[in-house]
Image (cartoon, rainbow, N blue to C red; front, side, top):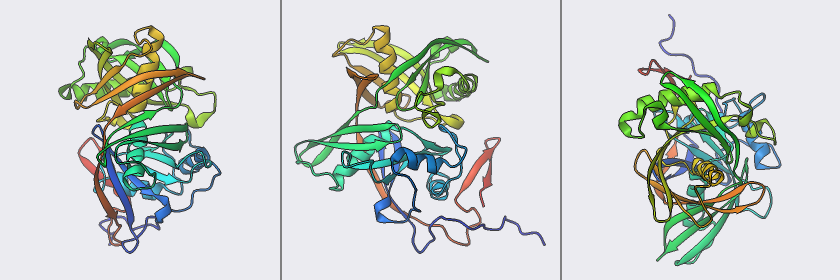
Length: 369
């Protein structure tokens, strides 16, 4: 008789005896699941730099944000997919930095694969490094945590008051504008997209050009529009990065709306949509950096001005341009909070394997055995 469920295949996922330990944070509502490779439980990732380790994780033939199987992928899937994760989950594997100039390295991942940059993840890692004592800091004051990512070195400043972490400021990799007013045809009409690289490539489109507002009620239409824009711009030259395919490709679509300016500068609300329609709960830190680059080029953001950037969930990042060196260096400030510590296991008799791979028609789970 044919078995009711697919047979289990050999897996690199740690068993119930070993498990995978994580520390979870959220940054302005976006989750981030941290796995410290120094504590074990991860297969080795060859490479002399974080970028090389990311290329190994993406796997042969992979590029940009597209998923490809690699040595860490069973662990990623175990942690990001239901029933242990969810479609909005992000995370990172802590790996050695490129050199002694950084405190740690990070490989970022999401439900569909790996990312070269994750601003809210870097902010969570900065808070985690201080909260766990990996980087010493006074009870009152700031601590600098430097993190090597596939997109380059970034720095977080963790703000402390009375022994508590009260906020994190991320200084990003240089951001640059790569294309302006690119026509995009959607089922909601024709719109114009601006492209900018900020560790990853983003397309920014004014939501009202599609007849939409940025609100939770509009999310189904926003997600559909984001998918159409992503598909239309997939091969646009502005999505490619001069440093090669790993940093190339359209990572996110930012649909934004203007709000009344503050006394300190512009104010906007946006939603960032990633591969497969993944919705960011935060204003997206690297997406905020991309918006800062575009606003600066437009002349709407002067030196010393702040962008108040709201998310569709109501959380806020504050962004500012701080220098121009090989691109626009920006700072994004927000709050990161620890939400839990976990030991995830895979029962050898669990036919779902690392979790539910996809949803057909939005209703039927497909086990990934």
